[in-house]
Length: 561
Image 1 (tube, rainbow, N blue to C red):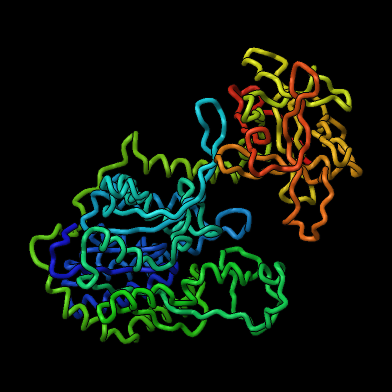
Image 2 (cartoon, helix red, strand yellow; image 1 turned 90 degrees about the horizontal axis):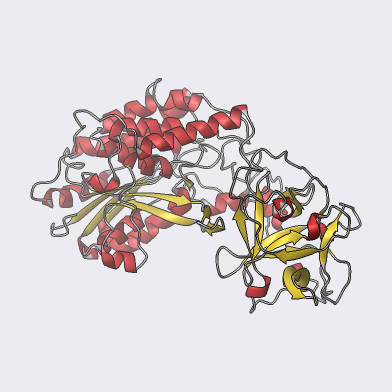
């Protein structure tokens, strides 16, 4: 980027699905007043549909092209009209979005964008598998796709710009709203970063040495649609915050596509279209060098609404909103940009995606996931058919049903992990089996041909041993388990729903959980016992989960609670 310009100009576009038509209409009006507005914009920033707009502009598309994209029967309208209304599947195929972006950019990375750029997203995290098979969580985090980070100091400060990411993947990631679209490599909509990327764009400019007083920015919105809760919330509990209380005067429309009912707390967390926090912060930073154009809409327009009245309303508001302040700002500052800038023009020919293309791989993965979801059960995953070795952190031994016995009451011990060619390994391979009616709790059952499950002994106030028992209602609490992450990510406490030490607390969140630990019981091996969690001693009480080192159980029938 060129930080030596007299000013640093930013255009920022926000999320809103089909309401991006309003943004495109406003942009066209600005371009009609000042035809150099795009040529002399040094930085483009976008979130969600604003990221798609940014991507289109980086490919040399004009505001008129954007309007055509949103209004043509073969563009966004056709895409949104082919909706899947199943709430357990994405409403639309993300592969089509990635493919449309690949037509613009091929495999070109963010680092090669012809302007400084910021596209925002959110990665939900996941499980990564180390060489020894142990699964290690990757925590979720916000994402910036930008060509404005990448120095050694950025790395030291933990600032990642992901500039090697193809523009097609970055833009698609920013627009992958849960419920509407599948995720892109674990990335979802930029609204979970923030619906409006303007302040982040200003921060990047400052990070690159631009004095704050030289930064000028315009945010182009997709329409303000205020929300509110009409009820008195003083006595609300979790249920009302999640589901509302049915007040007809509430204005908290369902945020996700195919969402059955509104959720006030979800709308509050993702309030970008109903509040203007980022524009207020940008105004505090830049003063009269900042303008936000975001007209109030008369009603809620869903992100995938394609009826003629909604399309007309968006264009009408885009054409009628007052843009005088933005026009004046452009007239005062945009002409000050000097020197040769990389032209933003449509590439003469976007090369086809190669055999090693990251974009092609993302498209193929998305299409395979969609086909699998439609035609056949997904592959085994944790809690849904996948087996693990459960490894003790301190000793590196694994949970083992002693002697491979299927008899009730067989103790669970710690033993060396058996080699791949050992045909008796099933007694060390554990599956999380969901417990019906107990969300967040699982039975632990091995790959042995037995329905026995891991059970905490019924003694109270001691260190009861763990053994294998048949499921029963009387023992249910002692047979249900869940995971608590430790400070050392990749190791967990395994807590039981039952308690070995009765608590005086009425607050269930203050109860010290009972977890699996290892103890010496005068045997040549350690035994698995239940102990109250000691927050300061995770080694004797924490466990890792090793994925199987072969496909022995890949097709194992799934057990259901």
